[in-house]
Length: 85
Image (cartoon, rainbow, N blue to C red; front, top):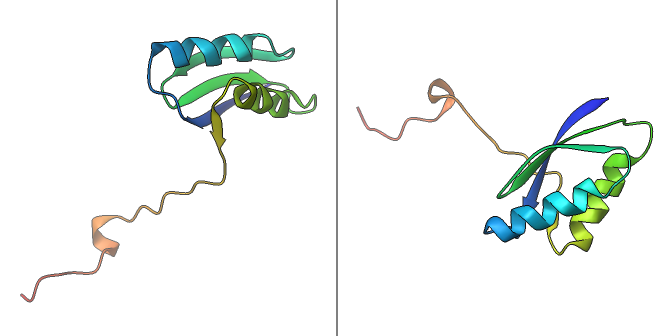
């Protein structure tokens, strides 16, 4: 079993949270840990294809799974200085 965080766009209210939670709960092999605006945390068996089914259920509920999003984070030491001092 693997815990997976799924980023979701298009959610803006409690109704959206409920809709995604119901959609995920209906997918065999998916255990819903939490759903909040913008994300869901689920437990799946990676060998069963349940994650793909969960993502499809989110899509069918009218929301978009955000994939391949990488934030470029740099520490202060690595940022170029903008001062002339």
